[in-house]
Length: 356
Ligand code: EPU
Image 1 (tube, helix red, strand yellow):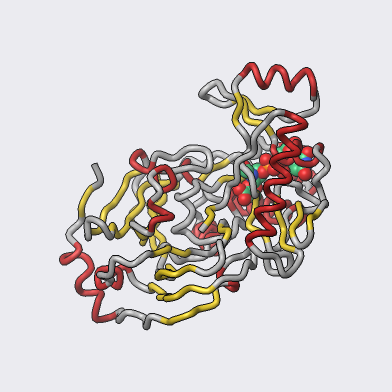
Image 2: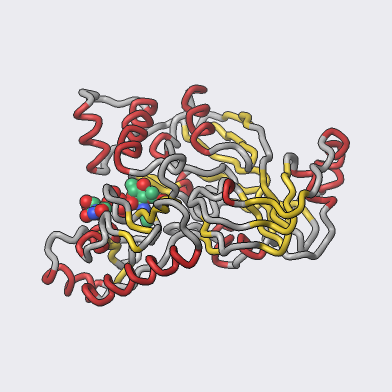
C-alpha cells in the first residue's frame, strides 16, 4: 500500500510561503498543448507548491496539466485545469551505490536531465530532449533509445484528492510498463484524482553506457566518439532527435502518436513472411513489438496529410498540425491511418497521447 505522509507535518509550513495562485476564468489552452489544438478552460489555476493543493476542496471536474506535450485536447473543458508548475531539484542523498535526486513535478524534463549530467550524476542521458515535465514522465513511463524512465525511478510523491493526503508510491507501486503506469491503468491522470508533486530518481554510481540502439551507435561513430561519456550520449541523442523529430515550436505535434504495437508470436511470424523488412523486437513477456512508424510509412502515410493534419515527412509515427487543426481533424487523420494499417497488415494501432 502507498505510504502516507503527514501533510500537516511536512507541508503546513509551506502554505504561508506559497499563497495560492488566483483562479482564472475562460483561459485559452491552445498555448498549453504542443499540438496547438484550440480550447478554453472554464477555470485555470497554476500550482507552484504542493501545499497549495490542500486548499482545493471543490469536487469540480478537474484536469491536471503538465507540459501538454502528450495531450490531444478535446475542445473546451468545462472544469478546473490545474497547471503544475512546482519547481525544485536537489540531491536527497548519495550512498556508496547511488545518488538519489528529487525534482519538482513542474520542472522541464530536458533541463532537469542536463542538470543531473552537469552535477556528475549520469543515467538519464538517453532521455535527453524529450518534451514535457518531470511530473509527467512516470505517467507514460517515457522512453527513448534503449532507456525508460522506469529504469531509474525511485518513487513518486502525489496529492490524492479522494483521500485528501500526500502519498509516496515506490517504483513497484507505479506498475510501470511500455508507455504505461498505474496512473494510466487506474485512469487517475484523466480524472484529476491525483497530482504528482515530486519525483525521486535513483542514479547508480556504477554507470553503464546504453548505446546498443543502432541510431545512437551510428551517431557516436559519426562524431568519432569511441568511449562515450554520459554527456556525449546526451549530445548525440539531442542531435538525433533534432534531425528526426519536429520541434513543436515550429511544427505543432505531441511526439509519437501511436504505440509500437505488441503482437503474439503467431501474428509476428505471419508478418515476418509477408513483410521481411518490418522491424520486430521480441519482448520479455514473449510478445513481439512492431515498428509502428514502418507500418504507417508502408501504408502510404509518411508525409501525407488530410487537411490540416498529417503524418510527419521524416518520421511517420509523429502526427503534426500543419496549422489551424481542430480535434476533429486529428480524429479523422488518426482513424484513416488506423484503417489503412489494419487493411494492409491486420494490425490495430492504438494512440499514445492522452485524450481530454
Ligand atoms: N521507421 C520507418 N519509418 C518511419 C519511422 C520509423 O520505417 O517513418 C522504422 C525505423 O527505420 C526503425 C523503426 O521504425 O527501424 C523504429 O523507428 P525509431 O527508431 O525512429 O523509433 P520509433 O519506434 O519510431 C520509439 C519511441 C520514440 C523514441 C524512439 C527512439 C514509441 C511509440 N516511440 O519510436 O518515443 O524517441 O523510439 O527510441 O515507442 C514518444 O514516445 O513520443 C517518442 C518520440
